[in-house]
Length: 254
Image (cartoon, rainbow, N blue to C red; front, side, top):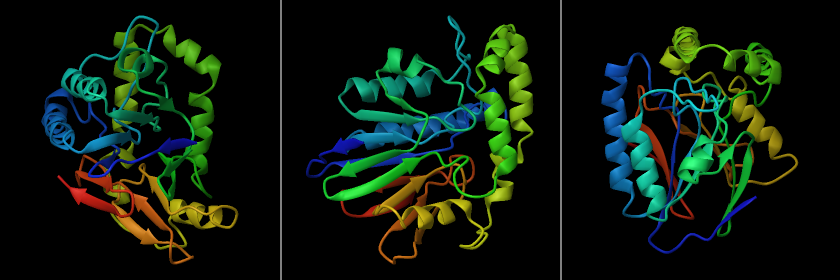
């Protein structure tokens, strides 16, 4: 569990699904610049920042090599961390091959599983959201392959030029990234993260369930009429982010 004692006049910020690198380096830099400006603005009252996954459209760490690019984003994140802002990173389905780069270079904890966060008197459950709840069987099978140590070892032996070109091609073919499949609300009975959140409430109370992955920004009242499901949207179509002041959770657009 992560315990946060939120100070007066300070806030917690959340952002997810930037997919930097998509669709190409030139167009991605436009979105990267916008995100850097946002990071620069929130540093005045930000005590904690949660990056909720898929910051990159693809990420892989070799022993001595990381993907080219993203210098401004990584530099601004490092600046915020060095200034004393707590930053936590959740691995998504597009950067699940992250290893220790963020921890060793930026001093940022990296989470591969959901986390419980206690903020003053409020209890939150945080995760990227991929693979949770019923359904999504195709992705769950794919994740077993991608997280298999043998598959990771074999991929690591490819030259980075070949490996990155292949991975970027496959990643950009995924329609989920574009957000086209995620722009419609499917209904409470078909939204797998809402179903997961409602089921979780049967065994444990949370004030807020905060996820990314779905790309569709929303705040939804769960079955107990008290707890809320929150999806943070993305920085491809919506440019939305979450703000929590210790009592109220808001979604805002940049």
